Amino acid sequence: MQADTSSPQQGRLDPRRAFDLIAFDWDGTLFDSTALITQSIQAAVRDVGGTVPSDLAASHVIGMGLMQALAHAAPDVPKEKYPELGARYRHHYMARQDEICLFDGVLAMLDALKRRSHYLAVATGKSRAGLDVALRAVQLQGLFDASRTADQTAGKPDPLMLHELAREFGLRPERILMVGDTTHDLQMARNAGCASVAVSYGAHPVDGFAALQPLYVAHTVAELNSWLLANA
Image (cartoon, rainbow, N blue to C red; front, side, top):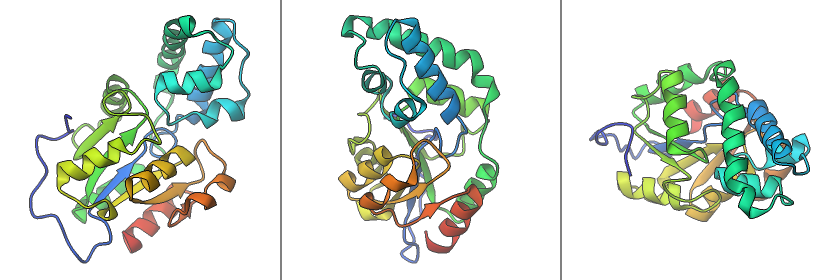
């Protein structure tokens, strides 16, 4: 799989750190896109004549691969309409994508982790094309050492994204920390044998996190940053 940089930097493994690689979910964790994704799913389902999901139902599928997410959000839409459903979702999302940006404090947090020589990665349910567009929009193409998307690997909570990152960097799963805003992220980490940290400001309510045993639940980017600098 293609990483965001040409090759991993050497000499960055440090036994004094708890984690060598920190993998971030994108939507709802680094990128303030939860509301737009939810509304785009609802509009797409409406366009093809399905029962429009509630805000809770539409936001619950965020983090999955696109077609997996749409199938869960619109169970009454027949499979033959899935291509149209996906096209309508992309239409609605792209029409408003310039309205969204990184959460406040994300760039400073990533820069601080980079200075500490952690490997940084993105593990997302977005497509490769969608992630590339988002990274260009916020000028972060060169910051991450690697990335994995659902269309290149498997949708969450399948652990393939994290397994591939572990192989790419020659790391044991326990040296990888997954940070995400959904139970799909946390379950993927458990399935891969990795630790996780949750954020409460994204797509899923916090009451579903405890059963998946994240090390910490951050309620703001500032809290997440402080925890990572002290514990990662």
